[in-house]
Image (cartoon, rainbow, N blue to C red; front, side, top):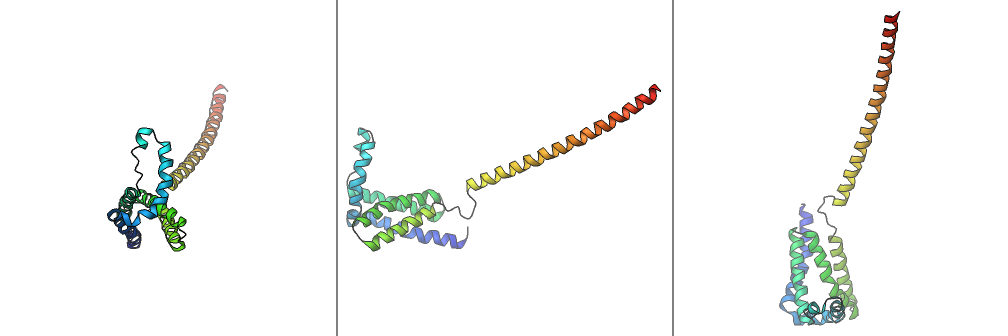
Length: 184
């Protein structure tokens, strides 16, 4: 891994880890940003879940603030260390959404743009392959190589069959001459 890539991942993750720590330790200061999102999302989630599970979904904005902080810390550490970097980036993108919705409803243009930028960066980070080709690209290259190899093998078999046919005809003529010479 390059030093530049490592530094970029650590710097990007540092925001989420420190912000997640603030959310986890001081949920009262940030609960109002997340409250509007919680008020919308929790009833929708509860309507999809079975009743015994829906009762366990927390409805308190403080609890969701702490969960969001924990998600940011886990995602930030995972992305920064490179251990589960893509799932960590997905976690960071998901953790950005409640604050993005809260900022857009409060008409805070600067906050909305900041959260939107962080969300976009987190989505871009989900595609980070650390400079290595993706599995889909590798599979396509393997498929192309296998197809090319099969085509070459097929052409070689065709050439060998043509050569074998010429040899059989040549030997057949030779045998026919020998038989004709023996009969005369």
